Image (spheres, one colour):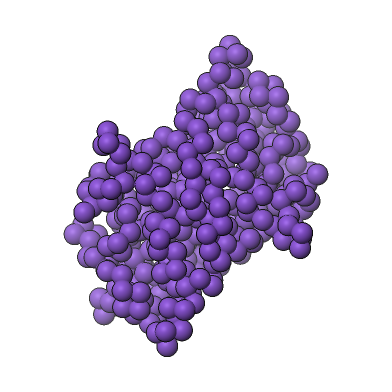
Length: 193
Length: 193
């Protein structure tokens, strides 16, 4: 039996996007966003949303670029901290000991220690209400060598990402492969034909 | 050491959104989308992207409404099938035996068996390239009673959602709680102050 909980922003999973930007003094900032995801295949784009009051918002508006670093679950503490504090009040890279790496192709830094990095330049800015949605064209993706399997294929399990659960208020990780996509449902298709 | 894999749509996790719509003959359709997520807190909104060639795209354009049903991992086979076949070629509810439930508040059906349902009306349509991004205002959320814990709080673990891994091509699930959000990184904040 379903129960209404009202008009809430609840969806599982929501990603843990660590968004890297520079401020006007070229200081690197990293913050978290759960409101975002891939939104177009060609051009390859992702979206990420920020409130106008945030430093990430100002930085992206000024520079027209950002990165998204996907952390592995060993960094959950540092990532949570990134979301707790404003870059206006602290040097978050210094506080965590993580490394801001200057992207060679967009005007933004990424987190050197995190396994998966998307470098983006802003294509569109959509004012939606409390949040502004930035559509970034993904101009390159960089992945740690240890995330590829023996056949050279990217293995999401080795990225060891985790997710944020709105309402619930926890991070969840250690997900395991449960089925092959575009395959496990094929018998229903065959039976129906 | 990071390796460039080019400009690809790869992000972990991407959600498994089962999008429900009606066609011009009021036939219910369900299909999958991994390109989407929450995008604004006020008004509460989510985005989902479809290619113009899809039935979901035509249906959402015509009706201005859709639902998102989040499946639990016991339905991975049915969900994969939803993404393998067009609603133009098959009655996907009939083929899977799943139940289209007419939303009482938006002009779209949802999947009765799935634990978490978001009912949306279209606020914005953004042409991004191959995909059109639909911004839906979340007008209500419905959750199965078994997804609440003893204290009456929503427990993401009981929803048992799974995710899709682009490039990797698998579904991942059975994620477990690894840390409390807005909490586990607090010691870094305290130490830096």
